[in-house]
Image (cartoon, rainbow, N blue to C red):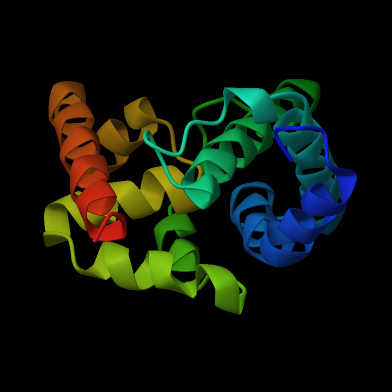
Length: 165
């Protein structure tokens, strides 16, 4: 994909689109918006493929971050259009995040998050599978923003170690 191979990109799409669509649905709750977010995310993935560095993150984690950010941008845009406050997320989102259906290729991410300390795992789930911003996590869990940032950093380091085994 980094060399512009469309066949490689098609294989990556086939392998990961289900998991990434689940993330979009978890954030946006509407199939039409989730499909739009997924399409925009894959366009960005294709355009930024040369920026991917395997030594920094797994391909899935890198694509997940792009997809998550794209879905959050669409959520915020829709919120502004509809007059909803940007920080307004459903209280039930964390429960829905636990039930996000990922395709078989990405199922291990949930298992790996379960290996983290509970307080770190909850924040990683909210941020990367649920689409919460760090500020929203801080507000929802009623913990300082600095604590959220520290736990995200700890969680990502632990996940990197798990994936590099």
